Image 1: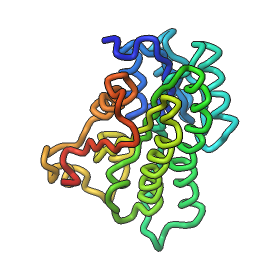
Image 2 (image 1 turned 30 degrees about the vertical axis):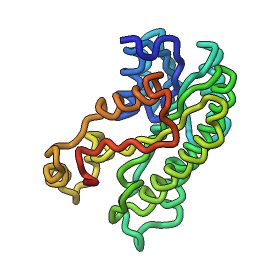
Image 3 (image 1 turned 45 degrees about the vertical axis):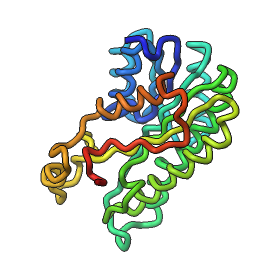
Length: 244
């Protein structure tokens, strides 16, 4: 307990899945947490469960003004910002030849542009706080291509470059930037496709099972905490051995 005592951390896509697990774990470890999502009923319920240590705002990661509101609300309530987890993401399951330009752009806007805007919005507040940490949630799809996921793969590969460039530019301010690359995690996104036998896929990985959101949250906790004080510009894989 207490690994994030005194820290204020923002988490996007926090209404469910990995984002919810991260928000709950961070609060347990002493952080005050700002939750952002577009799923208002679920997001508000998570924040209410965390009590005075958390707040929820409707947050569209594609919108710079929405980012300004999230950062501003955290500073108004808690006086500072120390960390950000760019967790929000979507996937549209279409082959290269089936995917429309509109669908492709939607995935890129949420997964890639959203993280870029988040770093831009949060970095000044982290500098004011004397440093901090940013975690970008990429994917094993940012390490290896998967069929019928052209937009998702493109965006997750891009997050690797965003992470490394931000680490280079922000390191002098005491800001660490790292990426996490989950494999299959037991969320609505992973199980949302009727024509994919997810159980068979995850039985085939070395650990023989799908991962859980809290397992990714624990890795994010490490990277946000001072335990990872010399880690930046790095890629952390949590995939049950999928890439191996």
